[in-house]
Image (cartoon, rainbow, N blue to C red):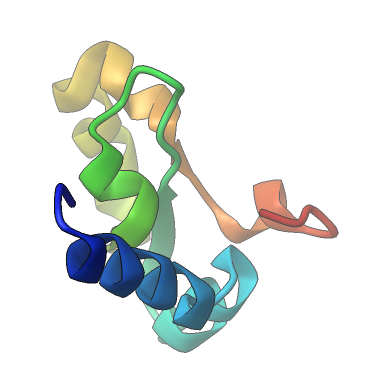
Amino acid sequence: MRHPLGRHDGVASALRAHSDETLMRAAAEPGVRALLYEPRATANPFCTTLRPVIGVRPHLEAPFRQALKRDARRLVGPEHLAGAAR
């Protein structure tokens, strides 16, 4: 992003990005719970642009969150996004 073309590409990519709600709807699949990685202010900027979505079978969500420990709080489900804009 040090060069003007890189900055332009970064801005253009951000403008093309889909909302969190659109990503979660696209990831919706029967038998899988979609979780969005919600970065904090100190998070890797790469994740604020790409908005990672993780699909987890419902019975594995609790063990998955336990394994992530404190980082599990950054995973949010579609109910967290209802009506919220990014």
